[in-house]
Amino acid sequence: MSRDAEAGSVVLAATPIGNVEDASPRLLRLLQGADVVAAEDTRRLHGLAGRLGVKVGGRVVSYHEHNERDRADDLLDVVADGGTVVVVTDAGMPAVSDPGFRLVERAVERGLPVTAAPGASAVLTALALSGLPTDRFTFDGFVPRKAGDRNRFLGALATEPRTMVFFEAPHRVVETLGAMSQALGSDRPAAVCRELTKTYEEVLRGTLGELAALAGERAETGAGLRGEICVVVGGAPAAEVPRVEDLVPEVLDRVTAGERLKAVVAEVATAAGVPKRDLYSAALSARPAK
Image (cartoon, rainbow, N blue to C red):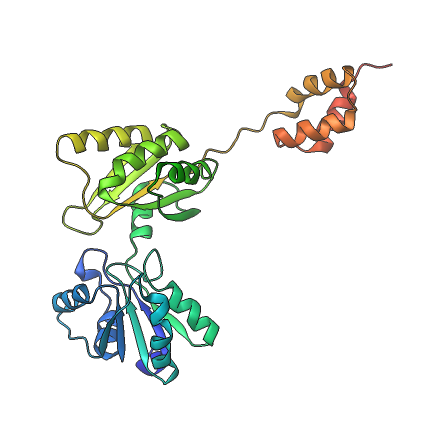
């Protein structure tokens, strides 16, 4: 997209998640040419600009979780007047577990254009490095801090068939892995990815039980998991569907006890995940002749 095309729009600009060399040429141009740069942390923005060897050309304003709703219309007024507002967070893509969503939401309400300058993503990087299926996945953000909320949150994901990606803080990762092991199963495959693209990048793979134990051991020795952390967990295995023939004895026993055949077939077939028509036909064929 050219500079003229970006004028009069909000641009969500991804910043490096670690290695500064991942910054795109477009990000550099946007930082130099934007009318306003809305930054999650203005000090980090200037630090990043210094490492990139560029000078932020426009006005810099703070834009974080505590003021994003109140500041949205002021930023969008700039866009409405034909200016370019670039949104950057501390790392990765704005609006993904970072400030930006409220601004996009309000821009849509006002009919103002929003685009993105894509780049590094901790979610996609962790997913790609995890060794777990990548064809279908979910991003579930941070696990709740309180035990009750955390257990309910994870319990609702126990049957999720897709690979799941979470963010977690270093001081909570041991507790979170233990809770995941309890709620999702200690034998569930997983990966803990930390400091992605940075000097001390590390990817630990194993079962949730193994990773919880390893994280606990490292914490006890003072070599705990530090830095930015993503936890990737394999989806729930598909339930094994029983053969229709194996369900027939249960159906016939219940019919013999006085229940109606169609009602029993409907209940048993639904619970087992088999076609009702097939089970009904099999049960009829297996009934003793009168």
